[in-house]
Image 1 (cartoon, one colour):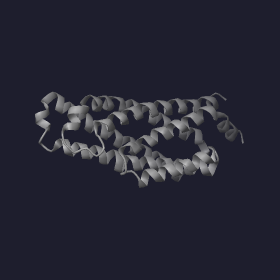
Image 2 (cartoon, helix red, strand yellow; image 1 turned 45 degrees about the vertical axis):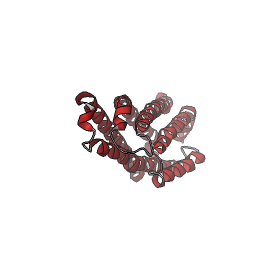
Image 3 (cartoon, helix red, strand yellow; image 1 turned 135 degrees about the horizontal axis):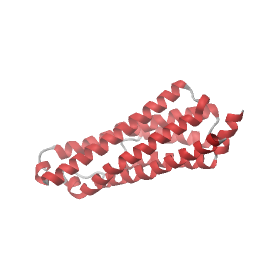
Amino acid sequence: MLNTLTTPRAAALAGVLFALLFGISIILIRSSLPEGAQPGSQWLESGNEKIRLAAELMPFAGVCFLWFIGVVRADLGGFEDKFFGTVTLGSGLLFLAMMFTTAAVGGALAATSRDLGEGVIAGSGFEVFGQMLLLHLSKTYALRMAAVFMMSLATIWLRTGLMPRWLVFLTYLLAVALIIGAEASMWLTLAFPVWVLVVSILFLFRDGAFASHRED
């Protein structure tokens, strides 16, 4: 009985913390890289502290996301399909690794600019390379791995009935939008932490659904 009650609440808490920390990190990174702005060193000059703070917050968001994955899979228990379970775990870890890399690259460039002076970075081409690397890692790769994570988890929910159908179909819709429109806007990344927040809130208020499935 104790495990039945605590696991969904632990997932909810981890998911809420991830959504908040990751969302803040993304806002800091994105506001340092104005959409449509000319590539160059100006993003380091104006967003140095934002990038540094995002790099410091990202590891804590990652710990929360790992916990979120772990307790969600534990809740699925015997209902988890091995194929989709593997895809869910793999895509979630790849997403997290690429977002760690994004934050690390930004943090390293910001620290270099601060410690060695803007002149070392400006005009060398590294600022443009760093900017493009950040955008490609987060938008082209990490965002699509997040979409795969959502779709595989939604498929498990659809087959098991552990979550409401409206959430399943909303998850599919958002995942397809992320896959197709990943390059449309850098702010689209925020859709993922918002989705995790919604799922976490449902876990918090629907822990009885998990208990009923275990009793059957």
